[in-house]
View (cartoon, rainbow, N blue to C red):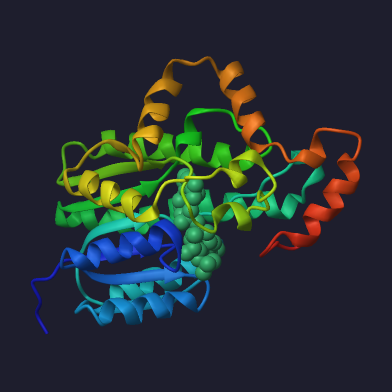
Length: 286
Ligand code: NAP
């Protein structure tokens, strides 16, 4: 059946910012292909079908080559051009680099970097052929600073920030735009899943509302903006101010926010064992 409704792809749509992005797209008349790893993505799909959107839910592990191909096959199966895509799925892992498992850091790279690059390549080719499309890549305000005690995660976001800006420049003479979304600390499952509940950042009260972040992101995406520091005024001010701060000071600030209490003192190795025991969704141990 022909349809005039545009189609959007959202990854990481089962919770947090991605779920709010999916809701925002649906509220603006988009049909959707949603992806996450867990069955909760189907619940989000059901909710949005109830609001009139045509929704395909894909359970796929975007840390793997096959998972990204599975999602792409589902997009192709709609036989519709992708008007907008939010490459948003991401994971973190907190803790001292040498005290944490290599497999956890590798998974951060696989989801945040490899999966995003792979999916961007698949979707952008078709968008360029159509000479039309809007691509959103979820980076972070931490992309602008070295991130002690979430070193690989922060570096993965620096990669995505650079990647998004580079693609944007490459595509500037086409009808395709690339926007980087840079949220500040946002109230989602992210910090718990990253094993950062006991850090100052994890315990921070008044984190940003993911619905507000998604709304800001959607508006910036539709306007074809370069980047958006989304969320509260506090996050926007922080995002603007951090540009002027030297890396050494930014690293010290990130350490203050991200260092687990157990890593700071003599109980460090005991703390490491505790943290390992409770990190959700840990990958294989290496
Ligand atoms: P979240 O609630 O934990 O959501 C993460 C989403 O990514 C979930 O839908 C999750 O699906 C999906 N995901 C994770 N691993 C996946 C995999 N291997 N394959 C497919 N999907 C996967 O956290 P969030 O805060 O909304 O995070 C969304 C994005 O915002 C991330 O890229 C994060 O880095 C970024 N960000 C967050 C903050 C913050 O303060 N929260 C700040 C800046 C940037 P499953 O549950 O099914 O695994």
